[in-house]
Length: 245
Image 1 (cartoon, rainbow, N blue to C red):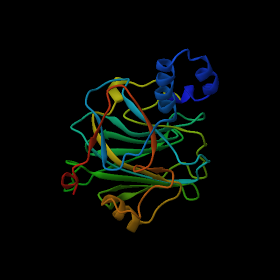
Image 2: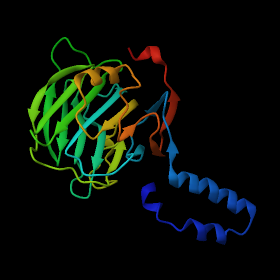
Image 3: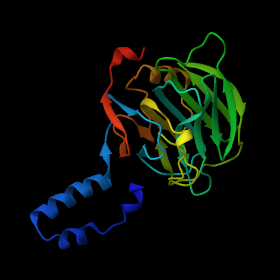
């Protein structure tokens, strides 16, 4: 992964460049190491099923977590299982995971354990559904939200702490830290408006996040300003607002 290259001695690389063409190449390479910044008004598209296409997101700060909220919007025609948001640490490759079992059942993972939620009859995940998953250590309460409405609460890994320095991936599910992707678990479709907080946000804020309110931007991952790396067949496109609501 790109993150494994960040420890290179950039100054030495520039000193060793023999001509202006080499220096220009290095400048573009260095820019790639530091990542692209900001996806405001953008959709990330994964057009084909692969084991190599993904986007790595860099959190704004890295610390152990005793709670979290993750919100995102997506569009897919997949009927098999797939990953929506994969957060791996040195301790657990599914330290946090939002997972679609099928079109009617979704799961939240913490420390490789999970609870699942079923979409009730009469509620649809077609189009561009907005999902939020929350969890807090003190009570173990895990909750999944679809389009601003709760799908219920369950108990998961009470008293646990999620380790710092994660690898955060959309488009693939990590079976080891930063890798071991499987084509059969890859996401095919479009993802946008990914936000993550280091606490459980209010139901009012979840409803605001659904409509892209400026008051509902993640303090760990803010889609508008996030630093990210693309790998494989990944396309960024402008978001057409009327498609979402």
